[in-house]
Amino acid sequence: PVHRPLAGRRALVTSGPTHEPIDPVRYIANRSSGKQGHAIAAALARLGASVTLVTGPTREPDPPGCTVHPVETAREMLAACEAALPADVAVCAAAVADWRVADAAERKLKKEGGGPPSLVLVENPDILATLSQPGARRPALVIGFAAETGDVLAYATAKRARKGCDWIVANDVSPGTGTFGGSENTVHLIRADGAESWPTMGKDAVAARLAEAIAGHFA
Ligand code: C5P
Image 1: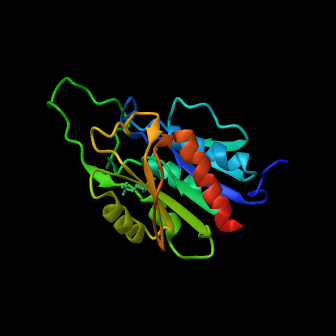
Image 2: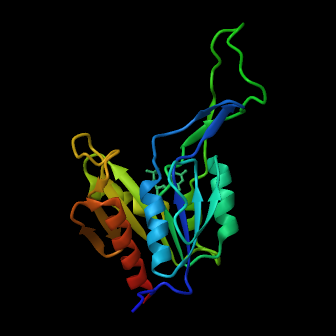
Image 3: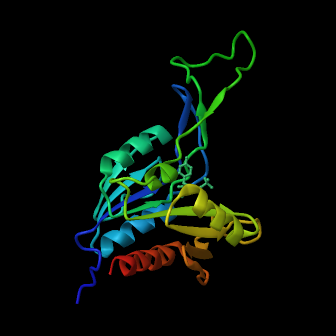
């Protein structure tokens, strides 16, 4: 028997890093691989959801059965997310750059003359907080991630309130845990009624278990 509890549901997933241009050839980025976000998109599709994956630049293959919108910047990611609404559930797994260069140069910055340029940074939109804002288009279930070093539960619980999302998937990325860059993850699922700590498992297994929890929420 095929297990498709999310059939008829629409899911939006963000994944990967963003690239914020400095000039036409240079950018600010981070080391997000997109592995966890892509695995979540695939797991939701396997349970029957209609999945839109909005992803920054990654080396991950497109997850089977998902509509994929590749973007580069945080502002493009937000626009693509808003265009993908309505959705029943949004999972924000992307590592969005907190800042972008205020006025990216239209021509390549030159080394000759003037010395090194100063980069003025401005804040990027917070996609998770924006999607969590109350309103007709808010997904019924909005899920964010929190990578913390130490006091994981306290910081993640505070983040859940600050962002206005429903659930937070929190993990301890302290040096020595092996989480960062590794294939395994130890996470805590924080909901309104408390936290649940999951055993250490692969990122695909975290995705599968999160997708089942989402299906349980809508059951
Ligand atoms: O504030 P912090 O970056 O620690 O929060 C992490 C969560 O917020 C993740 O779910 C991430 O996808 C989301 N986020 C976002 N847009 C931003 C920054 C973070 O959606 N600009």
